[in-house]
Every structure is written in structure tokens, then in C-alpha cells.
Length: 589
Image (cartoon, rainbow, N blue to C red; front, side):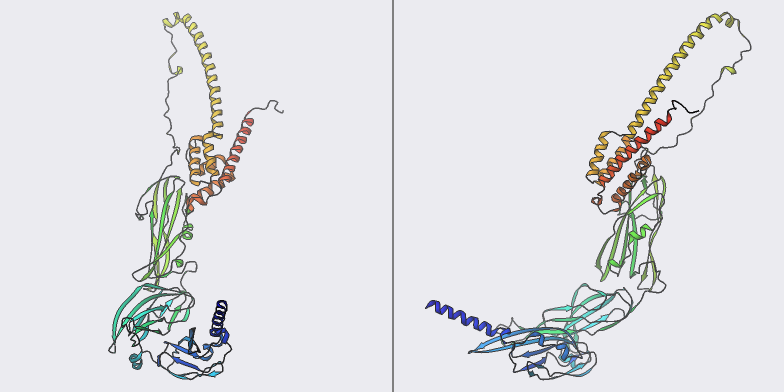
């Protein structure tokens, strides 16, 4: 018995669900279709809610408001269903709500009748009045106004759009939809402002929101006005608690705005990036980024050591992606006797004093190759002043630096002073003294002794010359094959792809192993004169000073192979040179 009751209960519930579902009665015929609007009259270009109610469930695709309201713009449609069972009788209702933008042309418009599900609805006569019509001011609870900062701008120039929402009732919730324009960048600036204003004796709460619009193409364009959708509090007599007032849905929109967008001026250089802005500045700092150097500043740097130049381009008005690439401009600078390695520029954008502020930062590593004066030319960026409506230029001043010789750089020795000693020919030998005549026999013995000493001295010189030659050969071999410790350190750094450690190991090898006069990569490349090694050294230097981080270098194994090949080629070249220096055993006639 209990099982039968449970089974009957589930069958009844399942039947009710099927009966109440929209799909079960999708093919039902309606008996009544009603259309209505939330406000009449309506301001030109304003929005209103068009509601269609059917007393049955139908497919949403059957209602196409754009086909019925041909002279108006449909901005969105939503639907809802409800079912009620009272005393065994089931009533169903489906409601469609469409947000319609009224035409800008004043006059009376007929809405309907609408035929749906076999039933024809009623019709409505809608009056479209001017936005400042007194009849509207007396009845409407919400409206919007929009202000355009400038009616004519250049392409990619920022223009301000200020939207104001006027409410005659307390706001419960809502959202302001930004203005819309195809091929344009639109964003909100700053935060909303909440004020009050009295219009024709009525107190309105005013919410102000600012936008910036940056059009990307020229021509006459229409900006769709911002729109508000929300709910306001209304008094209700149905509730026992006055603090919990009822709400009412409301929508309104500002009128559309016409904007004339001019193309780029004809006299603007075709090779330069078009940059319209209210203000542009370009600064450069050397070494310490906190202190900006001017054209008369002198900074002591060392030959072969990198120094960092930091360029900052700041613009008020444009987006960050509108700024020209500083790394491309730096590469065009003619800097003699130095290697230039620009990093990837960093861009940022913020808001300040109600305007967009974009900034691009570029760090450049410069390695001087010669001692003396290093001249960095000025860097210029042309831009268009949108306030004065004329072309201007932002300039980072030129830099003149003093380059000191690097460690181990050979200096030119001063010429040795010559000294003239008197010779035997300078003495007067035309006469002999009696003492010299009597001591001639003794002098012979001294001459023999002197000859023996000369022979021994020559033998000593020959031995010293041979030993010096052997030492020079050992020194040349040591220069070609550096100490094992340094090579092991260099090998480990290369195989680990550690760019910084590899550079330090190379400089230690050049100083202690090869005993080169300076620790520059150009000196090492010239010492071996090996093309693969030269290419690998240049690639390492680019990765060290041109990339954002050092992890971008992955050619350690290739560099180590190039070093081994260069050492082998050096040994073979020296062996051939030694063979060529020996005389032929059997010279040809």
C-alpha cells in the first residue's frame, strides 16, 4: 500500500512538471498578447522599455522586435516565464522586454499591433519630443546628458566625453554603459562624481563620469551616447515595513554625438610615428638613473666597461602603444668607437589629473672601445601638440663622456736617453811615456788574461742566449695553452650557459693565462684571429648587455667548441712558423 502511494506521488509530480514546462506547451495557442512601454512621451535619442506579454509559453525565436520596430534601434531583449496554479487552474505567462532607442527625429510613432501565436496585440502611439521639452522635464525620473570636449580632432587624438546621469529618485542599483564607436579606444577616466542640481524646481541627483575616446580612423563618425540601466526606489503601500521599499527598473540614454576626425597632417614626415599629445618629454640619465645628465656633464668611464643610458619618453594623451619605439631610434644614432646594446623597452600607462599618461623606458648598454672622448648624439622625437595644433619636438640632450684607458692597456714608452762614452780613438796616443815602454812585458800577460776572460764571457753570453730562447719558447707555449684551472672554470661556465660567469672567466683567462694588454673581447678575438670564436664572443656580449635578463644566452657549448678550435689553430700556426724559421738541410741550387 505504501509503495503504491509513493509511486502515485511521483507520477503526479512528474505530470505537473511536464505540464508546467515551456516545451510541453510550446505549440499552445495564445489567447491574449499585450504590448506596453515604460514611458510616453520619450526624448529624442533616449531609450525606453518595450514590453510584450503572452499568456502562454512560446519559442523565444518567434519574437523578433527588430522586424516590428523598423524605425527604431533594438539594443537588447530578455525574456521571462511564470506559472501559477490556483484552485487547480494553471495560468502561464511569458514576458519579453526590449530596450529600444528612440529616433532622433521628433514626432509621433505607432507601435504595433503585433501578431504572435495567432493573436493580434494592441497598438501604442509614442510621442518623441526634444530632450529639453518642458513636458519631459515634469514627468521623467531619469535622463542623461553628454558633453564632447572637442568636435573636431585628428586621428588617434584623445577627446573627452563627459556623461551625466540625472535621477529624481533614490538610486538602488545600476550601471552606466560607456559610449560606443567603431575603430576607437574608449576608457573611463577617474572616478564618478556625485552632486545635486535643481532643474525647473525639481531636485536631481547627478552622477558624472568621464571617458576618453581615441578614434583610429578619419572621417565624420557618430559616437553612440552612453546608456544607463538600473533600478530606483519607489514607495509601495503593499509592504508592512517602510524601510524595505520596492524598486522599479529604469533605463535612459544620452543622444548620439557627431565627431569629425581629421587625417594626419600632410606636412608630417612619413618616416616618423604619428604622435598627437598634449605634452611630450624625453629625458636621459647616465649610470645613476636618479641624476639626469645635461649636455655639459662629464662622467668618467673606463674603456671596455659597459655604461647604462636610460631614456624615458613620457606623453600625456595617447596610449602606451602609440609611442614610437625608442630602441629603433637609438639604433639609428651614429656612435663611433663603441658597441650599443639596447634592451627591450618597457611601457606603462596611468591616469593623472584626469588624463592618460603613457611612458616608455629604454635602457641602453654602451661599451667604449677606445680611450678618449665618447660622444652620444642627441635623441629627438617629433610629436603633434594638440593644444597649440602644431608640430613640436622632444629632445634628450647629447652626452659627452671621458673614457679612461682600461686595465692593462699598454702605454707608449718614453725614448731612452742616449749616452756617448769616450773611445780609445779619442785619446792621444801619438807619444809614449818611459813607464809604458818599460812595462810592455807585463802588459802582454794582461792581454792574454783579458783574452781568456773574453772567451769565457762570450761562452756565458751564448749560454744565456740559449736559455733565454728556451724561456721565450716556453712562454709562447704557455700563452697558447693557458693554465688548466682557468680553462676548467671557463668550461664549466660555458656548459652551464651562465653568461655572467663566462664573461668573468674569459677576462680572467685573458689577464692571467694569455696575459693580454686589455680584457676586451675584441682583444681576445684579435689574438686568435678565429672567425667562429669572434662570432660567439659578439653573441655573448649582445646577450649580456642587450637582453632584459641573462638567461637568454644558450650558446655556451658552441662558445666552448669555438675556444677549443681557436686554441688548436693557434698551436698549428705556431708549429708551422717554427718549421719555417729553420734553414733547409739540403738547399736547392
